[in-house]
Length: 322
Length: 134
Image (cartoon, rainbow over all chains, first blue to last red; front, side, top):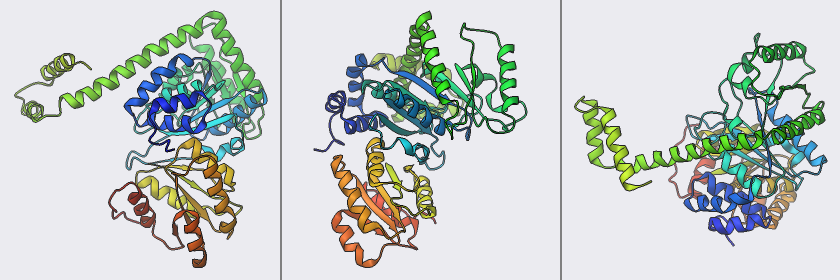
């Protein structure tokens, strides 16, 4: 029985029956872009939508992995099953990656209610990998109650997680810069819950105060007042309160109808991303021949212009269908 | 190709494991690094959830004849027979035939250049050996 070569629909069938190996191998199939995996995702889609998807993002070293582990333990204490997707960066030079989040997740290894998968970004910017959404979907289909998604260590602009998660935690730590460099504009705006981790370190009060001021300055775009919570993830301090707030946020989304709205917005972005992906691969196929290579050379010689050539490519793509 | 680098047992010295992890990253592999003090169950479970193609076991403590068979058992119990296992560290010559019999596909002792490991992994996927520096 070689599951590595097994067709995706077979893996999907076994996933639904609770087969962990099938889940794992289907994730690989999805990640490597296998065509039959796309069909399997289609079949599994109706079974999904039940998991609460919680994003954990923040700068490198802010304690995302440790906090994610603690959150998972807390959910397990509440008898909820947990899926974890942890994203780490791919080396831009070799294409390789070191995925080290398991080091901090030792306590979860022996728990059959937790499934944890590491992913490399494989060159995609924004904090997540290309197929992270699909992996979340598979964990959802597998029946996980909560899916925790830990992004790569982010700077100021990697906000993709907000498009994948129902509830986004932005984790900050004291001492990263005078003016909370690490969590200003973009990333501060996506926070549904702000976490000041390593709250036992000097400067935690100041960070919390600065964040509060910043939130007050920001235009209130929602009836959800973004809470600021303090945690010491290494000791688990503040984690039960955090889990409570995350649950309140979900309740808020459901009560106000924003949950459906948010998921519809995310669905639109997801469809757009799929269309872009497919157009990109069509582009590669359509422009593979020497005729097009000649036209690109002609552009370089200024005999043709890129805008007209792009029009012609689009006509070709539309004629052949995607 | 995804590879798990694991340190079974109780020795707390993981410089060798980290050097290999780093070299494999630089050779283009996705390396799942799990840290020290891993039990056979933890290693097999990580291999399952991460769906790795190969596992590199780093061991210095001398407990390989006890731990490796248990790791192979745990892998089999999870139907992971298709995952390639190799080892590195301090392993006496005399143990090598027994380890091979157990299904450990390659063993690299102290002083082995990291290129040996890379070429071993390349040969698994049918890639030609490459002269990688280091």
